[in-house]
Amino acid sequence: MSSEQQYISLYEQCRDMICRHSASVLNQARDEAFGHFKRNGFESRKVERYRYTDLQELFEPDYGLNLNRLEIPVNPYDSFRCDVPSLSTSLYFVVNDAFHSKSLPKTHLPEGVMVGSLRETATTHPDLIAKYYAQIAQTQGDSVTALNTMLTQDGLFVYVPKGVKVERTIQVINILRADVDLMVNRRVLIVMEEGSEAKLLFCDHAADDRHFLATQVTEAYVGKGASLELYCMEETHHKSTRVSNLYVEQQAESRLSHNIITLHNGVTRNRADVVLKGEGAQCQLNGCALADKTQHVDNNTLIDHAAPHGTSHELYKYVLDDNATGAFAGKVLVRHGAQKTESAMTNQNLCATKTARMFTQPMLEIYADDVKCAHGSTVGQLNDAALFYMQQRGISRTEALHLLQAAFIYEVIDSITLVPLRDRLRYLVDKRLRGELNKCDGCKLCQ
Image 1 (tube, rainbow, N blue to C red):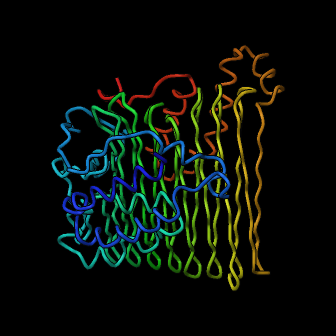
Image 2 (cartoon, helix red, strand yellow; image 1 turned 45 degrees about the vertical axis):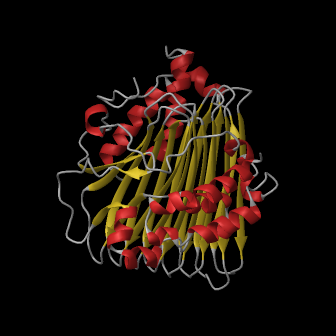
């Protein structure tokens, strides 16, 4: 059975069960998504945006799915801590692909702000969800988005009303938990109304020594003058596969900061599509990856400047060791009429061994004549002169390698405006580069 056919057969056989354990608003998009997936299947590596990751291979294994929504026995507060010292957060949990309503923060959010189950909110506020759900994450153009849309039953919904500023960071812990190899399909919908502000921190962890396949589709609407800071940190294990698609639509004078950090993984494929739809919108995409053994990290970005006076900056850095592979493909599209656009894209990479591989492809596509756009990429090894200089001052070669690699990655980490998170990530990067499996203080799941 082909990779596509097993999911086609699954949907045809289990459609009623999938719909019964979800909400009608989410169900309305399923059949159309299924039609697109059945017709197009998974993209091959001949497709430009999937040149460096083989979807057929990732989705070929036979994973279990919890379509009947059996309760997963886990108490996040008892078994898990992912605290960032000195950072006060409103803490929520998503277990596999279901919002964990039994563990809610004691702190109160500002009036009108909603953070909760996508399925439950779609039942209690169907008009609000229907206005935004599956609108910018189009299923005809991407197989993973189509597959996620036809199978997802729950997820996370974040809503910040007009003019509201959420001071406390909203932290979401995504926990993969199962006794068998499992596939999860997680959905995230973020709506930032005009003039609102919020910071979201997502932490991905795997609780069990099982093979996991996680698809995630995130839709974020950033209204006029709104500000969204989005931090995503992956710290799973070598048996985890993550395929994540982020879709963002920005209105005039809005601001987006997206930071994605891959500290430990198996196979990771992140896609980010950002449309600067309104005049004067600003976005900043930062990312870093630390990979060794046979780990694979692929970041693919598209920034679409559709209006004048837009500003975008990208900085992605990789440190690859052993037989790890990395890929970065970034494209900036400046449409007709998007004059006064300013854009800069940088991808820099270190290969610590001769067997590590990095693929990089920065691209510009410009249809306006009054713009300032630049892009560049480098792939190399550490400077021998710098290593020699440090060794001459009594620093061992191993420690010198570590210090130079850490300094290389810190450029991305230091761009994070949340000081406690920045300090925590510097600590985790340091431990990761020293070959230690990172554990948050008090974390029993990783032990």
